[in-house]
Image 1 (cartoon, protein in one colour):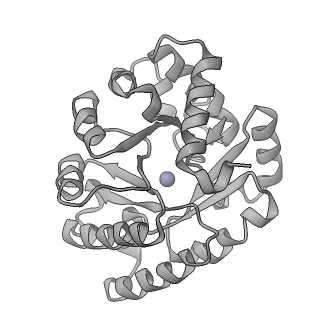
Image 2 (cartoon, rainbow, N blue to C red):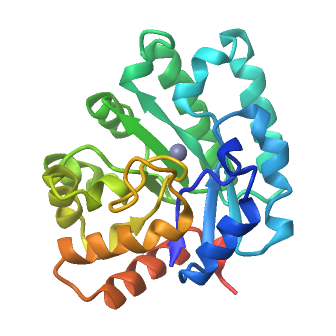
Image 3 (tube, protein in one colour):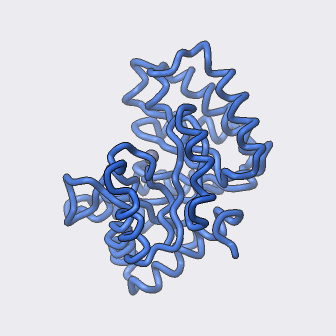
Length: 262
Ligand SMILES: [Zn+2]
């Protein structure tokens, strides 16, 4: 299995990162994608894949981080991102996206500008996108629908847009990944959304250290917990766990081609 989104570089793993990885591989993971949240983490992340070829990285600017970054630096950050993507180490652009809850401190027009800058870089470097969207589905759909198609693919991470919007995102060529919430008994919305996603566009993630799945809910999430997410996706699609695992792994291998093909 491939964890398509985990923040392995989070300080919350500083004390036991090697053990966390050991448990992940022991649980059956063959690859992990670690997306950046902002410019300060880019250099460190770029050195990660050389330590273990099962680790791949994305470089981007998370919308929730924008309030901490001076707006005057946005253009400069995108230029630096362009040159770092040119090294050919990163396998995706992201984490990027739109966040409704952050709009009061980083207005939507700034968020959209920074996102469009990253969409352009993904096209230029022929890389797929890792997109965060929380309480901004309408804005994201409108923004994406005004763009040409994304040849290298776009993954909506921890998809929270509901089953009703799946079809619109599918028309844009998007793929969907689900995290811990899809395992919660009462969480009908992510389960219905997961069911609405065709099997060839479905992936799994932990978003560790956040969004721990049942029965780890409330604690620190780690990539080994991907097992629970995959099991919940299998239930949503009424498929054996093995089959769902095989399908989502194949999708992730295809999507992150540069990282996980032998
Ligand atoms: Zn994330």
